[in-house]
Amino acid sequence: MSTLDTITLSVLQAALQQVCDEMDLTFSRAAFSPVIAEANDRSDGIYSAVDGSLIAQGSQGLPVFVGVMQYSTKTVIEMIADGRCLAPEQGDIYIVNDPYLGGTHLMDVRFVMPVYRDGKIFCWLSNTGHWPDIGGSVPGGFSASATAVEQEGLRLPPVKLFKKGVLDPEIYAIICSNIRVADQRIGDIRAQAAALLIGQDRLNEILDRYGDETVVEAIAELRRRAAEQMRASIAVIPDGTYRSQAFVDSDGVVNEPLTINLAVEKEGDTLTFDFGGSSKPCAGPMNSVLATTLSSVYLAMRHIFPEVPISAGAFEPLNVKRPEGTFLDAKYPRPVSGCAAEVSQRIAEAVFAAMVQALPEKVTAAPAGSSGNFALGGNDPARGRDYVMYQISGGGYGGNAGHDGLSNGCSTIGISKSPPVEIMEQAFPVLYRHYALREGSGGAGKHRGGFGLAYEVEILRGEARASFVMDHGRFGPQGALGGKDGAPNSVTVFRGGEAHVPPHLSKEQDIALKAGDRVRVGTPGGGGYGDPGERDAKLIAEDVRLGYYTPEQAREMFGVEL
Figure: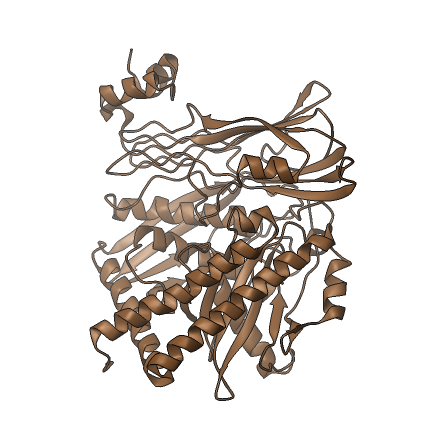
């Protein structure tokens, strides 16, 4: 039991959180790429010197990285210990993006840095940023029909990008020689490193003020309390087994759905998650590496119990059986570009669908569950340079016991938002002809789902190639407890006046475009919660008045004649 008083413990908890939040802010403010600077597709955290376990993570970082970065940090520590990686010195920063070493997809690039106190490593700081391109067969890295990870881009094991604080020119040259628009990456690299250095300075200030032993004691106590709080939250769930399914449209290669089978067993104050019986490893890029699968379960439980402080302790009561032999435990060389952005959200959806049976007052119907990955790469003749544009988009959240779902919310796995239209039009040769809520997309229910996003982009100059790795094009987000599914994803490409819908609905790559061609996307609406027949007629009439549903849709979806 800790000897720290409650006030000191609370102050140190907030201080560690603030270190991570300031790293997040530094990263976004200094980055060049809109996907980081505007969409905040990044995360920063503090990790144990012993095993890489999570101590604190920024509140504005992507939740999907909550488990992933502790596994990649652990891998770096283990590889240093057995000689597969050079031993650290003060000022070193390792770079790694290998999905099979505790990662996600190749575009999520992690930096890992040791923090020293009195000549010994006190902890590790780590962050992840989504680089807009990492090489591979298509601009942006989202190869919808990749059959091996090498087709998705440059794969980096842990290597020292910074040695004693100095950028290694040889490693940097290798990276730049393998990615597109390489001259712009230096801004993101410097921003990512700066975030870690800011974190180191702020952490040292805390240690100097309170003393290393006090902070170590606080970290241990915070972990113990997080585990205790999660156990207390789980204990109120009735004992039993709760089952659910979720479906991935296709893997991008074989046009058949992939199934996630989940059984959640609650016993006492622990939960066991068993994905046995899910689809086998797939040919295309919708495989999930183990770290992402585990992190997907953790982030889903964070949605359900947000009051539990975030640390490795919060995961201790969550037992996830390794889903060997399924597409949720990808092994080299399976392609994985869709794992973090799409498969992770299907895993979370399966958790929600199971847990809403146990906790109907706390859990929502399924959210949109797609990051809307749209990558566009080409040449801008007016500026005389190449570009890679990466668009992510939100969708509707599911209804719940208390109210309707949020419209155009961020993806389940993050806080990332679509970059402002004005920024995108300034940076790339495109025009957004339409950008609005996708009316009619919310699933019917006593509390309806939120609405997705509808947008249309026109190519203004030059030639380009478009790629999509999205999901929920075949199946809309699930309704709960009698609620109806939300509208599925929709992608249409207009070339030379003709409309083209991808055969896999939400996935295709290397679509050639030229000036005047357009891409139209409608993101999913959230699932409805409860019997649509129980919805207040006044709320339906107000939705119709606002244009969210037409009178015909109100009649069809809710059984109400207006």
